Length: 344
Image (tube, rainbow, N blue to C red; front, side):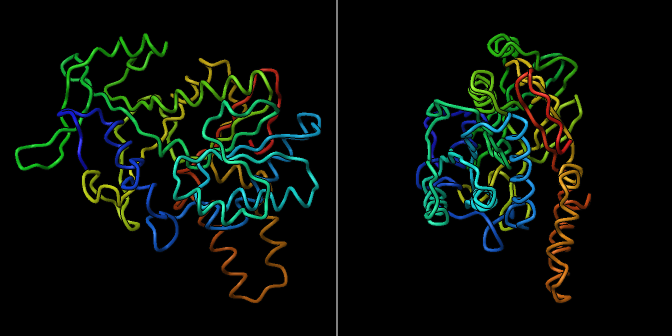
């Protein structure tokens, strides 16, 4: 992977590794499933997608049953979540517009094949959405956006950048920076009581655009992602290759690079854009509150032992604290005048 400059900001490096045309990780391969590098919740069990669909219907009812509503999925993976949502919505005969925001042309082809019989519109920008209300869904979306990292040493702040050493290998370097300049731009105090900062300019940008749509056209944003709630930020960047952890400089273009969302910072950014945190909980609590255990019982009722065991094994992966149950958090962002607590 080639770069035009010597010292590359970490977010630019990650962006190239993940999204560079033809060679970026998400641009030329299917990362999902056993043959890929990881498995997401919609592909673990249909129960996950059904619960998200039920939540959307409950929110639609809270919005006083608008004649038409937009469902916008941010980064739809292999299309499984949207596929199941449409399936549930069709049963309830809801009138919806379905949109997918997807950067990867490769994944877009997979999504279009899976969703070919449904009226889904692929968009390049959220600004293409002109009407509302809107329900934005972000399942493992924000963790895949490039981040900047900063570290404090001897009362000075340094930005972590990427450079090549004498052997031609990539390595991290610390470059002196003026953190106050960035804070002034985004009007958020990132460095207060921090020794380390992870900040995604793209997350900030997305939330700014989404907030305008929510505040003007009504609706909300449901975020499901792995992360933590501590005020103190930490270094959480990681790479996965064939279901195993990987050095971020190895297998470039063949491995995923992600980080853990700091939901405390996400809350700060949301409030900056006049959004209200309508709910924040673990994936386990969210799915149980929506009735996933009861739904599993219904599905398993008349099945043979092996099929019944498979349903509960998959359910365990979604809600057990040793798997996704507590590592994954669920946050609901909406406008200040909306009162809606379902799932939280």
